[in-house]
Length: 276
Image (spheres, one colour):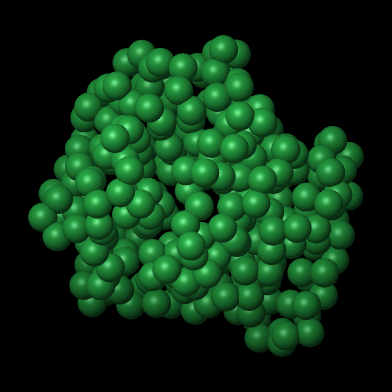
């Protein structure tokens, strides 16, 4: 049985870790900075943001990163985009063998303008480039953890890591499509958030569905032009990692950019003290 060190136990991290553990061929040691969250997950096997869904399989929760990384056959990351660099600096300080590293956070690093897989390489060194993969696409933790059909994109800097990502995460309900355009996949997942913010503002101002459709359509056009100018393939932006993620993020009330989401989040904080 292989060991997977999982870094980050937000809703998305817990969801993907649970998916990997449920396959039954891996031991997962899951790291979080929050001792209270580690205790809750250990005792209940339920995430506070995903009530009613208990994890299955071999999962251990810890605040000791060294424990998560020790003898790991694969490392998966699900921290915030701003947390990528400091987390991998900590990984580097602890030492890490040349094993597959899968990035699942979306975004572009502020200040440098580089995609998150490149941030990991900048910190860990060029020797890790062939081992860095990336998972992105239209997916909500609340749906994936329920086993609802979902399709996303697996990519990386080498054919071997792309195959590894696809094989590791694929389940009967979670399909991974391979794509060698890692820059395009990363850009699609990051830039759609700008349009989603605009759609959230439009929704808050009650401007109607027509304005949202215009924002999404013209937004996709601008994303594609910028991405192609940066060296991405237009087909990538037209696919799951671009248009698919844009449609999901801009249209669903479960999106963090929707007005409805923030109203529900506020209600949760006021009623049960849930940390969002």
